[in-house]
Structures are given as C-alpha cells and as structure tokens.
Amino acid sequence: MKSLYDFIVQPIGETYNNKTKVNGKELILNNKIESWKFVNRNAKVISTPSAFKTDIKIGDTVVVHQNIFRKFYNMQGEKKNSRSYFKDNLYFVSLDQIYLYKNNNKWHTFGDRCFIKPIENNDVLKHQKTTPYVGILKYTNSSLKARNIALNDVIGFKPGAEWEFVIDNQLLYCMKSNDIVIKYGSKENQKEYNPSWANSC
Image 1 (tube, rainbow, N blue to C red):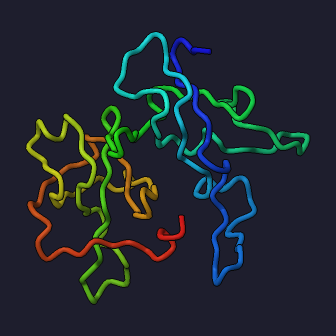
Image 2: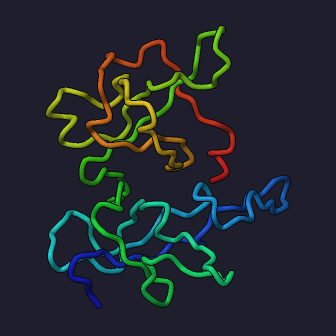
C-alpha cells in the first residue's frame, strides 16, 4: 500500500484530544467537533510517497495539520471524516501538511517550518501572559541556520503567524521561516511561558 504523492498515516490515540484527568476522574474539555484546537495532530507514518524522497521513515511520529483528523457535519447533519480520510483509520497527508517529525527519539522540522516558545510578559502595565510577537526558537530549519538564527535565540515574528501546538507538554508556536522578521539575540533574562493546561495534553 503506497500513495504516489502523499504519506499515509494513522492517528496516535484518538482523533480528538479533548479529555484530561483531574483527581483521578476523566474530564471532557470540549464536545464540539468543529473546534480545531482539540484535534489530535500526532500520527504514525504507515507509508511514504513514491514520488518523493524525504528523511521521514515508516514508523516515525509526525505532527500534522489540524484538519487531517478533523470531523464535520454535512448539510444533512451526518458526521463525516475529513477529505484526508482513506480507510480503516488511515489518512492521506500531503508534504505541506507535515510540520515536525520524530525519529531516533529526536524532533526535526519539515520543510520551512519552525517552532517558537512564547515568552512571559514582564511589562506590569500590560495584562497579557505572553510578550506579543516575540519568542525563543526551539526547533529550527536549514533556512534559519543560513540566516544565522540559532536555537534559543530570541526572535520577533509577524502578527498572526503563530499557530498553537503542544509538543511534549510544551506550548509552541508553529510558523514558516519568512514569518521571523528580527533576531534579538540570546534568551538571557527571558522566561519561557507554558500554561498549566499544556501539561495535560
């Protein structure tokens, strides 16, 4: 079983991550299938595309677009799988729908994606938990390395570029290389921000 242009993956766990445990009891965080924030984005690679050669191998874990496993209701009110659905809990994923992959117990970005850790806001006059449009580079790529932007550098990014992901219980922003517009330097005196709910994902 091999697709010409797409990876074939299956979700790791359920298709939605909308449950957590509090004091030994299961708590449902969301019951609306329309909410993309609770869609599972972790998948196992079952097959790689025939037309492309990448470093992603069968059995690797990949972080995918939020719409891959997302369900919806059609005009008749029937629950349907996404258009990525193949069969038997298997889904097609195109190259631009993979953001991160793990092999040999290490995460690697895919394509021109990178991941940024938000920074705690230390301005007492602003009632925000994070500093807007600023973060710490946590997962990089060859494009950023060529621009002399290194891991743990404090960077600035375009407004609206950040997409929330939880990777290993850490809230991170996924974006493209060209969304990073300035390099501030090292992370000295900057405190990383991680909300308590990320530890339950």
